[in-house]
Image 1 (spheres, rainbow, N blue to C red):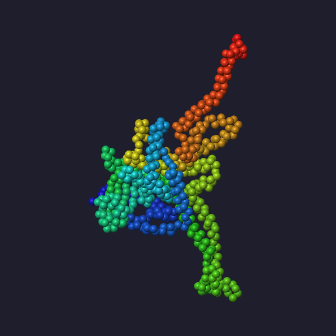
Image 2 (tube, one colour):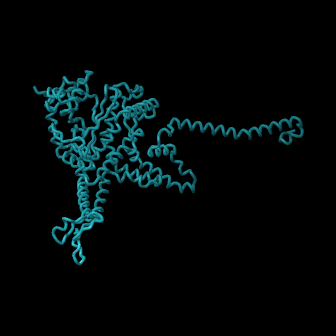
Image 3 (cartoon, rainbow, N blue to C red):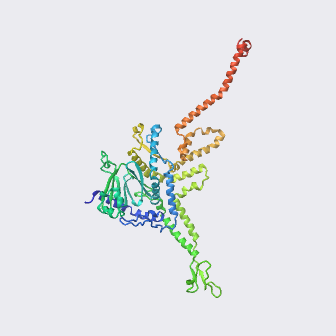
Length: 556
């Protein structure tokens, strides 16, 4: 008897496959020309067209697009999720708790725990692979799982395996992942007794034979919140054997385990489009132009030869220092002439350079290279460049933060909390509902804030001539401590060398105390001298009262 759960999942999956057929054609073309190791969209279920170690670069005649994509992934990685710094913070949603010391320390501790768990696992390499998918195919997916409720692990989901749907709010909450496993792997993951008979038999006889499975995660409609097992969780999880149409494993998740993001989405569509989709015609043209230019160059270097009579070419030798008998007639004229093909490879080279620049622009390579090409810029010029970069990349960064990183962080918090890895929440935050927000502080986020820094620097530059005339009082309106703090944040100054607000107040109090003591010490010699003079005058007056009293202006 067929499993109704498996039938429902597979029927829905078939409809989802039909919805992305046209996308797959474009993605395959992109992969073959820019990232051939991911050219798997024509792979058929049950028959692998992938030969291990196979060369897949037959359709690549110019490496510039592939290099542009590689630089795009590296730049996005370093700008959005750099390993060497904390690229997000946590803050209470209630603004009244923003300066609560206990709440701030708690959120800082939780934030540090997140980064420690994340980078002690495989987050870094998996998220980097995701940025390749975003640039090439416009879609990226990351699975965030845990091992026995303790260790977090990450898996970048290949786009050819990834199918998803949105809810009424445009949020992805249903994911199907179609993937192959060997019989041995399936037995290790699900247990031999849970597998269909055909896979059991293969596990014993042909353990490396591949079978196809489907992982479905969706909201559980019949969740029983009173239960403590997977039936009370918000999301249901099915692993389905596609060949036998059986559910081999059922489970659940408290939080959605997939983080899905799109580079840009056209209205009415679910799947995104990346910069590679935009420049695919130019990539095809560049490859064709390169092939044609190579042929023209070959014709120019090794042109066809024109012979006077038959049979001469059979004996012609083109090696250096070769002697060709019969190559001259009795009058000394050449019997063999190169054919003038009339090609000019230089024109092709110029046109190809134009295409390469356009492709680099589409992948933001030109923008990322600005600061590298002009290292001697002033601070204001550098901040203006950063402002330009932040303005252009703001839509992409916002979508990645909202769709990709925020769900990932929420999932990580859920896993760590269930494992008891989060410190106890302070009472003030509990009373406020325990709500806090994610505040991103990546280099790209700082670049988006560069406009604030530009405004500060420009204002100070414009006021400098006035200060030379009327004095520093023109800067009295500005809070210099806050201005320095904002500029430091925008420029990414390490927090370890910055004083906190509390530490700054302590420094100010110490400086005021030291200034007061300095004033006392400075006044002490004068006071001592005055006291000494007064004591001497009093002593003299006591010894000669009649002479001193008039001098003191007192009656005799």
